Image (cartoon, rainbow, N blue to C red):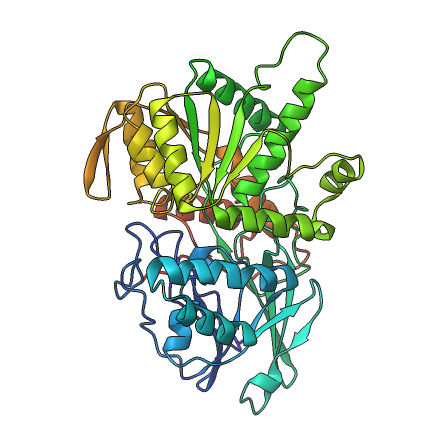
Length: 472
């Protein structure tokens, strides 16, 4: 079959960040799928990274932006896209449309300016271009494109990664020929807390799929739940602080959901006093608190289990032992207090890869204390402080934070099962579940090793497909 389109990858090729893919229909028409920020040592083909965020590719033919979900590595460069001259529509799911402005406002304030009036104008402009759509509904984009003979329609389907996340099906029709291209975005793991599991599409001619965990398997949900409980109990046995770097949207809410369930189970035990009775759980992020409230408001998008718990009178994202830190002064007071008076508590703070945010102040204050434990529950990109702590902490190494060197004396733990990304099994099953398999599979959004291993596994499922790993 002759291809009706071509694809250029402007990010998530040399790693897992900076997701940005261009679906080209002809010389005058294309759409972008995501426009994300690079993190750590990862860059685009021309070297754009977390410090050089300008759009380095031509956008003259880009007519629309399709957003899979609102994590910063998928949407963080949208303001720079507008600065480069883009003024087209932004399509995303309705929950993502609600969350997007909050994410971008924070990104602009951290990376661009603290001028509130300017931020407000930028967000207002971007928000006016956002069109929230329903899941599983085909949207005709032809009227936004300057097409003579082709037609384009798209559909968003639940990806189970974070609230509002989607994989996107793009269908291009030219006379009697039709081609369907699927962009996976970030696929969630089965049985992710709060969210329904992703269901694969019926068919795809071309599939662009992420590979974050393409070379490994996660623990089963029951196992990871027990492991989380075991690690926290071990960590607080010496009255230490457990630091959990977590992104404000998605991971934080999943952890709160799990902690509420552990506390609920412990409270219902008949024997003795629970060790969890005195563990305070601190969420130190105004953005995370804002997202958590939005998660509560959008409970109609929760899975059946979460809705049952809510109906029974429980509050999966709000409970007595939860404390939220708001202002910067409260944050600094909390850091100083925990540094002086170590006590059994869990602190969840952004960023998830320790590349910025309030987690840095906790690390600087507590990483050299042996009573502290750092628990990683998500992927750490190459070159980020999180990856360095994860790799060198168990060896007694050091990490540089804000240009100062800190010896890693804290305990370092990793529970991969809490990743919001599908593992190798989930990724392969996504493809295996398609009734009509793709003829071409492009593997992006992963380290080189993970891409290669996933490619080998997918070739067993689709022996006739062209497996392609794009390179800059």
